[in-house]
Image (cartoon, rainbow, N blue to C red; front, side, top):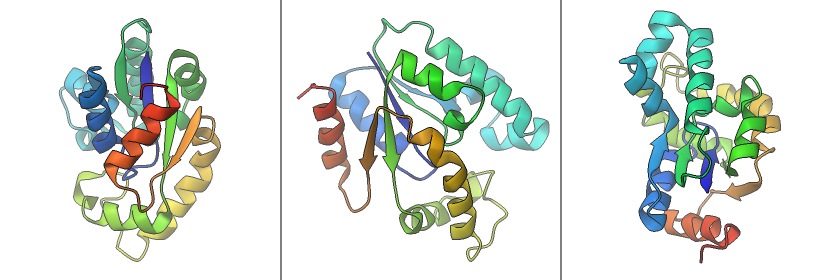
Length: 173
């Protein structure tokens, strides 16, 4: 079983996927970290040096590679934009049990302000423009995120509660 976590940056994919991996014993694959490892550059460097189109092509290739062996269990933490490009969402749905970690714009803004310098898409935005930027992206991406098998609202929930909710959907509790 492959368990995929999708959602906007700051939705908690990295944190929840780590907890899920620890609880299930399934290896964790963070798609962005895997891309970085394979290309020998940080995501920010790839965006800066090669551009987003190059990054999205590499992201698709790595996603296909990771999902090519569906008999091997794993927890897959997707990049925030992964579901919105190519036919990635169809592949994710076909090869994994997918979860959309949904969070409110205010929640995402608060979380992302603390990590802004590490996020190439928002690094140059000022604090006042961040909520509008997130809202625009969510409007564009929600059609893809909503194709996940399950939607988990993460607002005002503790990580352990989210973990239990995911495991319950998978009949692993």
